[in-house]
Length: 60
Image 1 (tube, rainbow, N blue to C red):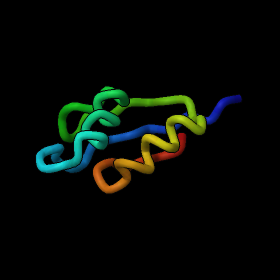
Image 2 (tube, rainbow, N blue to C red):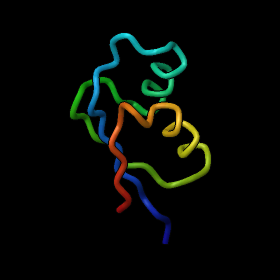
Image 3 (spheres, helix red, strand yellow):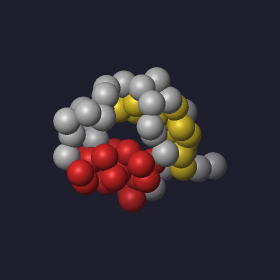
């Protein structure tokens, strides 16, 4: 069974770097409080590492 990860945007995107904003758009997170569920893989972990100060990550 594949592990899944729930990602929630908890901080504003104003004033962040372009590559961090691009990662959030790739994850589909636009509004504070928005939550998405993803299958855990190395690519996702790399994106989350870039924006770890903006999101809350929970393993399901």
